[in-house]
Length: 445
Ligand SMILES: Cc1cc2nc3c(=O)[nH]c(=O)nc-3n(C[C@H](O)[C@H](O)[C@H](O)COP(=O)(O)OP(=O)(O)OC[C@H]3O[C@@H](n4cnc5c(N)ncnc54)[C@H](O)[C@@H]3O)c2cc1C
Image (cartoon, rainbow, N blue to C red; front, side, top):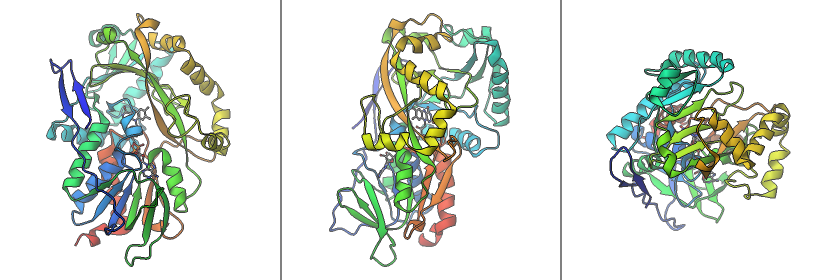
């Protein structure tokens, strides 16, 4: 059982346990037939599974996850921020789902007594040439309906973050922090209470035609386990292109893994940062830039950067798989991307190897920061969807498989960041899509 230590704003240290997820023991003797199977136990898959059963309680639904616990990849390796929706193009799905998702998630956290902190966020311009982009960001956030957002000057920046120096900033007081893996486990617990089943250690390697009437899709795991279902939903994050191709899906969008490495502020310097401090983002890139992020345990994470990972789940420099690496670097979309942003790619590699350089970046915001105040921290790997033209795909991308029985499986091939913040809103959208495609309401009788 996972235990989360909470300190600082609760006064004393206290612990909060993750809800216990009871996983069904798989047996080839029992009837493994479902109305719908969700592939992927990250926050998008589990939130969707919960929403499907809330709406269609008579369905028999299972989540299959290849790891031995839920939320092992992107969901359990991220900044833990509840984003308010400052950045995204007004009217875009990303903007709408983030703003809606923020409200839904705060209501859910309150209802279930899940710890979070609304520590707010500053996007800080430290140079004059950033002011126009900051102003645009402010206008965007107003258009997106981000609550109580303000443009503030250097004096107000210091009042909110006494150690941060900047010319101007956008302040979002409702940006928060939470443990997204813990939230996923709460969703999972509710899904189970609604009758859903979770099968861990089920690594999907094959979709085929099932011989059981009424259950056209047979799903086979790497170790030979088999289940049959009427319909499928794949939310496989970093593996979503591979899973889509197993059911005849197109080669693109391809998923290119970008590792985001964090530094940690040493314990004795954690008091230097109160809330989230972000740079003004480069409008041409999907990354928000290296930021200061407080965590619920009181630690402060600095990052993440964005370096090419040598394999999809490559959390360290030493995680290398020749086949995966070859398929990444020979991908025509990736080659075009690398040629488009050679300076950015090389700079991120250099920074990853050179802590001084990273600290130099961070000193723009907290000038007192010293190299020996930080140490290497954890990392996450982002599933970046890429077109054959080498464009970074920032929109949601759904498709059904092509070859029978793939047409009964809906693939979420791209759930862009901030997918955790938006997860409850994404789950509503996915459930609508599934119902439109597969008429789930007819099965719910
Ligand atoms: C470094 C970083 C920082 C981020 N920061 C934030 C943030 O602060 N706030 C925010 O809102 N969002 C943030 N995000 C984005 C957010 O984490 C993701 O959008 C979200 O977690 C995506 O969830 P998911 O369920 O789609 O993917 P995942 O969490 O990756 O889940 C996919 C699941 O599918 C499973 N799977 C894959 N293949 C198979 C298979 N063959 N069989 C069975 N199961 C399979 C995997 O094991 C995995 O558990 C960040 C992302 C990264 C990488």
